[in-house]
Amino acid sequence: VIDNRLQYFKPHASRIEKTFAEEISFSLNRHCKFISPKFFYDKKGSDLFEKICMLPEYYPTKTEITILKKLQNELPSYLDKNFRVVELGSGASVKTRIILDIFSQIYDVVEYFPIDISEILAESSESLLKDYDHLHITGIIDTYEGGLEFLKNYDEKKNLILFLGSSFGNFSPVDGHEFLQKINSTMKKGDLFLIGLDLVKDRQILESAYDDSQGITAEFNLNVLSRINDELDADFNLNNFSHHSLYNEHDQRIEMYLKSLVNQSVVISKSDLLLNLEKDELIHTEYSHKYKLSDIHKLLDDVGFDIKHTWLDDKNYFSLTLASK
Ligand code: AVI
Image (cartoon, rainbow, N blue to C red; front, side, top):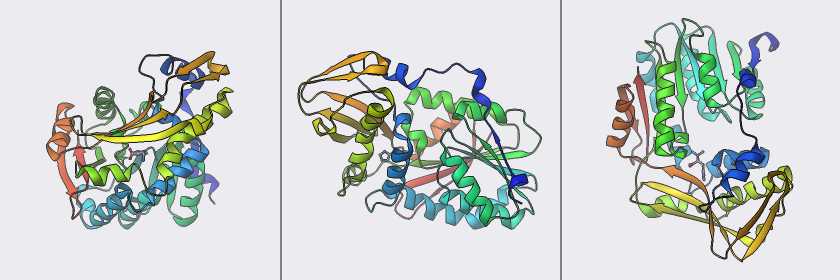
């Protein structure tokens, strides 16, 4: 029964992408060293992120879920009889289920297109199909860009494109702008875009969300070094690094780093790199931007979106904005 309700596409074969080894060779061979946050999410990293989402200090996931629940009454008024759900970075599917529940009230058959580069897509798709017997899934195993390319001119059915969890906040401002443009140009008239963005708030709340008392965020950050050890034949000693994060108020973002605790040299064989680090030197691993409502309006407005509504939680910690083209 499940088989004919599930299909996968892996459309990215034609694009030339740098390998993990090449990207690391480039990003650690510079004066300001960095590791792209996309490399956090191997199996261990994805599991650690799921743990982060449940931490008492990490408010974004819980807060977004309370806002999504509020949408149960309001979203249907924006949908006509011809919508499917598309999700960028589907991951584990707690939040998706709230949207699928809303769709199930409206449609006899619900179509869902998750777009995710990670293996988790298959796992979560199969578990969704077990719980929703009128659900049809087309899993697109690719980068966001590849998935959007696949969606462009796909058919006449309208798309509600979800981009939840403030994942957008992990882009640099320039890349974020470009990505919103890409989403906007993929959309046809009548399509909708629902984006979850984290809001500017008290420094202390932000900083403890990214440096929790159980040390899970630290483990998540350090895990990228284990991944490099395993996949690129490197010899990082994790005891020689610490998790370092701070809120940069001027740029409205959490910045995460790995701090070298000693002068050290690390070999990364598959990247052909001998990495020299000084004591206290930082490797940048993530930005997590926070927004004011006026920033969100400007971001979306600048690429030609028409904002329909923004929902907030009671404490104004997090936002969900619905926009059309
Ligand atoms: C995935 N992303 C939206 C998370 C965030 O909050 O920026 C990643 C994360 N990094 C540390 N904690 C969570």
